[in-house]
Structures are given as structure tokens and as C-alpha cells.
Image (cartoon, rainbow, N blue to C red; front, side):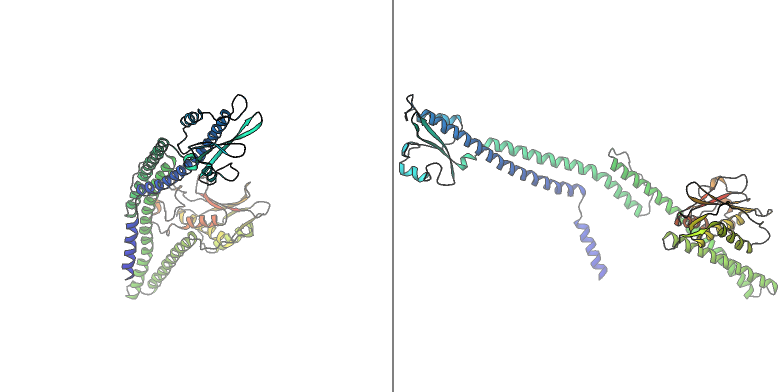
Amino acid sequence: MDNINKSKKNSSRKKKTTSILTYWTLRYLLIISIGLLVTALFTLWWMQQEAMSNRMQTTGLLAQEIADRSVDTDGQLAITGGLNRLVEDRKRFFKVTEEMCVIITGPEGELLYSQPPMTDEEMRHKLNDSLTDSRTSEYKAAAAQIQGDQGTLGQVLVMQSKRSLRHIPTEEITFFSIIIVFLIILSWLTIYLLSIKLAKPVQRVAAAAAQISSGQYNIALETGAKEREIHELLVSFQEMAGKLQQFEQSRAIMLAGVSHELKTPVTSIKGLLHAVREGVVEGEEANEFLDIALLETGRLQHMVADLLDYNALTAGMVAVRHDKLEAAPLLEEILYQWMLTQNGEVNKPILLLPENPLVLRGDPLRIQQIIVNLLGNSLQAKTPDCNLQLKLELTATPQGQAEISVTDNGPGIHPDSRERIFEAFYRSSGKQSLLRGLGLGLTFSRLLAEAMGGSLELGSNPPQGCTFVLRLPLAE
């Protein structure tokens, strides 16, 4: 039941998904359209306010002109018959609507002239008590004093409705609407082309990812994009696919190698024990078979321990200490313990120590693991007809590190293998048939050295044998 519900949820999620082209085009077009419409409304409001301010200034100029024309040459108030024609001409000149009202009052506020005509009672109903502005908020008035030789002779008021003052011609609104529509279409086209440009490489990467998920790592992407970010995405994905392919090949080789190396001692132990149990061998020969089985068991245990240690260290589950250690006594003790387990095939190692004692930081157990592993590799690589001669040298580097070099007189490392000897599960082709474990010793040793803040490298190729260099930080 739970699986059915999960499948329904997954199917519903798949149905809700949409392409980048559709999602971006609709989403950002909606955002830009709303932004442009809000901008258009604000601009329209601002244009109305500016139109009302400009028209009020024009109305004030008209009121002042009428006041100037209402005074004769003697400086007396004179309402002539040409005032109506003046008002009509100014209406057409200033493009003022028919809703305009012109009122001229005398010194005592009496009505002297009005256009359109009205009574004194109607005038006082339109104007406030002081006769300086409109009584209602729907109209605005511009006033101008009529000045004569004897002072103020009267007042001219020109009133217009706020609707007419804020009026914007239809032609301007149409032109502004065309601009907004054009910007929306241009924005949609830009987003559409940009979405197509971005969707194509994403689609190619998604198709390549689906191909990789199906187990096909040999993909080819067109990495010639002009955009740097898209180019880097495609190149990085191409490189990732190549590394995944190498990893898959290495994993297959590793599993085959591990299976073979673990199977060999198990088969040998089984055969030896079966021979003893069935009585095929008896007496001293049976004891010899059991000894060989014990050796194979130890070898198998060692390989399993290497594999577990490697996995634990790569997963960060191995704790490494950073103690202050005197390097010379530590190396002497490691060599002494190692020599106790060796036979006469190994000459006494040469240990070269500096005059001044060196104190380094590290884990004594891990340092011993690294050096013993290097010594063991030299022992395995030695030629059968020659005793192994080892040389360990301890020096201090100018970079504040203790350098421990381990040199042997073995056959050395083939140039083709020098670049890969630290890879996990790698063994040189000339030694594949030898019983040399899983090929994790050097990899594990390098990881231990790096965990202690140092390094493990293959030194310069001497005339005979090989040299490994372990570097660890000096204690401050």
C-alpha cells in the first residue's frame, strides 16, 4: 500500500513539472508585465498631476490677462463687449475645455461678469464665502486681482473641474499604450530567446545524465558554447563522465583483483586441509601442510585487515594523533623491532641521523605502519640471489618538515609504473603473478601521512633500487 501511495506521489510530481522554456517564459513575462503595468499606472498618474499643475498655471495666466484687459486707459474698471471673444479665443489657444467658468467681481464682491452667464446667487453658491476659491472639491480656481490707479478694482476667477484639469488626450494615451504593449512583446521575445538558449545545454546535460544513469559513460557533448558559464558546465560534465567511466573500469578491475587475491589463499587453505583430513598426507608432511595453511591464513587475514583499514581511513573513521615525538629514537626502535622478525636475507639497515635531534609531530603507531610497510615492500621486491640492504636517512627540510627517506638495493620500479604505484589496488604488470596482497599498502601509507599533515612520495630514481620519502611536520 505504501509503495502504491509513493508511486502515486511520484507520478503526480512528474505531472506538475514543466519545461524551462514554458516556466521561465510565463513566469518572468508575468513579472515583467506586472512591473510595466504598475510603471504605466504610476506614469499615467504622474502625467495627470503634471497636466493639472501646468493647466492651473495656464489658467492663472488667463485670469491675469483678463484682469489686465478689464482696466481701461484711465485706470478704471471696464467690462467691454469683446471680453467674450477674448475668453473664447484663449480657450482655443490654451486648449481649455468647455467646463471652464470665468467670473469677474467688483470691489464689494458683486458679480460684474460671468461666462457662462449666472446670477449673483449662483455665483455665491459656486464660490466660498471669501469668493477666492471653489466651494466644492471638484473644482479648482485661479484668481487674479484687477489693479487700477485707485488700487484694487475687483477680482477675476477662472474655475475648472479637476477632471478636465487631469484630462489626457486620447492620442497620448493610445501612444503610451502602444509603447507598453511593444515593451511587453519585446520582453517576451527576449525571455523566450534566452530560455531557448539556456534550455538547450541543460537538455543536453539532462540527456547525458540519463545516459550515465543507464550505465553508458561514453558520452559526447558539444562544448563550443560562447557563454563561459555554459561552456564550463558542459566541459565539467564531460570530464565528470570520463572520470566516472575510469572509475567504473577501475572498480571492475578492483573487484576482479580483490576476488582473485582473496580466492587464491582460500582455495589453497581448502586444498591443504582437505589433503590432511582425507589422509593423503601424514606425519611430517601433514604438519608441513598445516604450517602452509596457517601461513596462507595469516596472509588472508593481512589482506582483509588492509582492506578494512583502507576503507576506514578513506571514510575518515581512523583517528590520528599529533604528538610530539623524538624522531631518532622512534626510527631506531622501529628498525630494531622489524629486524627481530627477519632472517638472514636482510643485512643490518643503515640509519643516518642528523647531529641535532629532531622533534616531529605525528602518531607513533601510524609512522611505524608506514615505515614497516615500506620495508616490507623492499623485502618483497628484492632479487632472490642478493641480500637486501636498506638505508634510512633522517634530515630536516627548510620548509619545517622532517624527511625520512627509505632506500633499498632492489630492482627498482619500472618507469611506466612510477606514476601509478600509489593508486589503490594497483600492481605493476611484472609482479602480477607474485603473492603481494591487494596493492593497498602504499595507498594506505600515503593517506596516513597526509592525515598527519605530511606526505609520502617516490624519490628520484637511483642507479639501483628505489627511494621513498616520508615527510612529517616538525614540532614548533
